[in-house]
Image 1 (cartoon, each protein chain N blue to C red):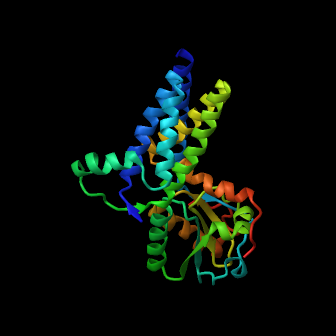
Image 2 (cartoon, helix red, strand yellow):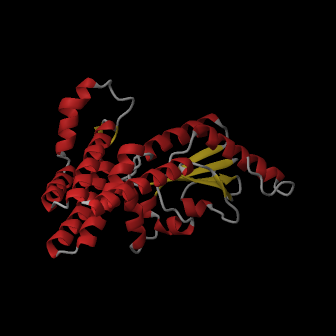
Image 3 (tube, each protein chain N blue to C red):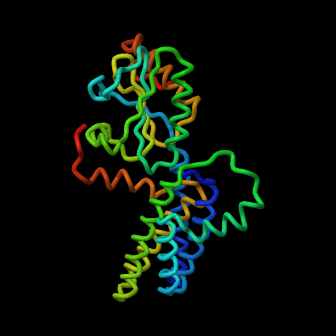
Amino acid sequence: MMAGMAILAATLAVGVVAGLVMKRRNGRMRTVEGARVTRGDLGADLGERATLVQFSTAFCQPCRATRRILGEVAGMVPGVRHVEIDAESRLDLVRRFDVLRTPTVLVLDAAGNVVKKASGLPRKADVIAALGAAVDGASHRPSHPSDKV
Amino acid sequence: MQIDPRGPRFAAAVTTVVLAVVLVTRNPWVLAAQAIVFALGAADASPYGFVFRTLVRPRLRPPAELEDAAPPRFAQAVGLVFAVVGLIGFAAGITALALGATAAALLAAFLNAAFGFCLGCEMYLLIRRLQPGRFQ
C-alpha cells in the first residue's frame, strides 16, 4: 500500500514536470544551421522567399491545427509556400532532420536552408517571426549569422 | 470521424484515477477491467466515451472545434499494450513489471488529462522510425 502510494506520487510528479517542460517547448522555434532541403527532397517547389515544411502523421492530434496556421501564414505572406509531408512515407527525411514528433515544422529560406525548426503546434506569431528570420537572414546572413529573431 | 476533444480528456482523467487505484491496491482485476476499456476504446467503443456523451457533454457548451478520432483511438491501443504487460507482471508474480507498466500507462493518461498531450499518439512515429523505411 505504502509502496504503491510512493510510486503513484512519483509518477504524478514526473507527469507534472514533464507536462510543464513539454508545454514550454511545444511549438517553439529553434535556430538550425547547416541543413538544407532541395526541391527533389520535397517533391514540390520551394517557395520563392521561404517554405514552411510540415511533417504529419495519421495519428497526430495537433497536425490539423498546424496545417491551418501554416496555410493561413502562407496565404498571407507572398512568396511563402506550405508543404506538408507524410512522415510515415518519408522516413528518410524524418531521420535526416531528426523528426521525433509530429507536427514538426521546418522553416526554409529561399535557397532551402533550414533556418528554424519547431515540434508541436506552433503559434502563428512565432511562425511569422521565423519567416522574418528566413527572409531577412537570406539577404543579410554575413552581417548577423546567429540571428535569433 | 470527428469527435469532441474533451471526450478523450475526460476518458484520460477517469483512466488516471483507475490506474492510481491499481497502483495503490495492487488489484489485478481493476487493471484487467481497464485493459478491457482500452480494448473497447481502440475499437471506437470506449465506455468512458459513452459516459462522456450521455452524462457530461449535455451539460457543457458545444466544443470550439472537433478533432479526428484516429489519434486517441491509437493511443488506447498503446494503453492496452501497457495494461497487458502489467497483467502479465501480476500473473507471473513480477510486481516490478506489473507496477512499472501500470505507472507508464498512468503517466500517459495523466499527461493527456492534465495537459492535453497525447503520449500514445507520439509513440506512432517513434515506432515507425524503428522500422526500415520506404524511400519515396
